[in-house]
Length: 367
Ligand SMILES: *Cc1c(COP(=O)(O)O)cnc(C)c1O
Image (cartoon, rainbow, N blue to C red; front, top):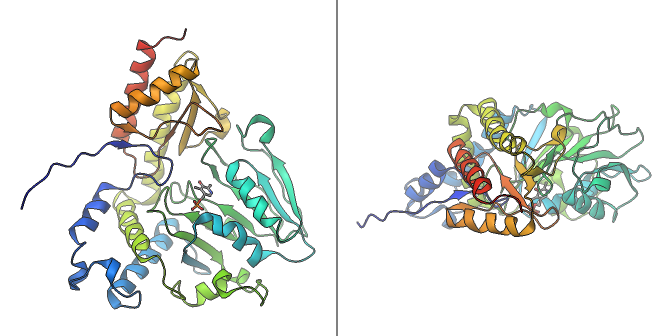
């Protein structure tokens, strides 16, 4: 056998994003002969006992690591988080009762657009006035509302909720947690529904995790397609149709890695440490690096900041790439840089990018 040295870079991509190396290695190891089947997992039935074990293990790991109570169902669905933008209203809208949303960024806007197809949407708070640089504070939702919707981490703008808003007792809080799912400890009981595309913190693109409180499964009207009903997927344990088996398998391996790290308290601790490394650098740069998010709303996942000029920003992204630091160019809506520090990004990688930025500032003073 020829042993080939594999080149791996430091990956700060915003999504799809870095995956834990041990998870990738395990997948590679068992790729051609999965669990003694003589086939890859891509080639076996989703009803086979070998796949069913993967499916169950992945689900159990989400429940265990996140502390999901027994009266919540955990679903693995295709279509991305964007599919939940319309499945949420399809499953939860109560005619005559508005759906209330907080507008905190691009993905919240997309979610509002889709909900508006189904009924009245009320925006209870927005940070659009400051290009989504902050999370609205003291947000409260109203009674007589179908549901209350927030996006816990705003991937493009680099802001994150650090408190949960007040909701009246009978109004379920629904959260798009795509870019900080399983990245910190949360109290699942505060939510009626949590959904998250896997491709930022827990796996590859192609699968979305939906956690729904059981009493909400009865809400959907009869006359919607079966594939759009959470209750059907819950009843069939996400095997109503062929689920994205490979994406669920890689998610399982990645969740096993999070468990080995010590679970979500250890994961959160590492994520806080990583974010602090970059925010400290920004705060001590004498204004050379200017954070986009206001300090009380800073994301632990996506650190967004500008440099003194657009030319320097361009140069910074190019030089980072040359040094094997990938994916730090910002989204066009904010400009500048965005460093994504999802679960699989190591502290070592974070220190590398911080060293790079420090050196870049020294060698490229503001004009
Ligand atoms: C990436 C992202 C999405 C979009 O997810 P898809 O799986 O591409 O549909 C939605 N919401 C948030 C917060 C995201 O970060």
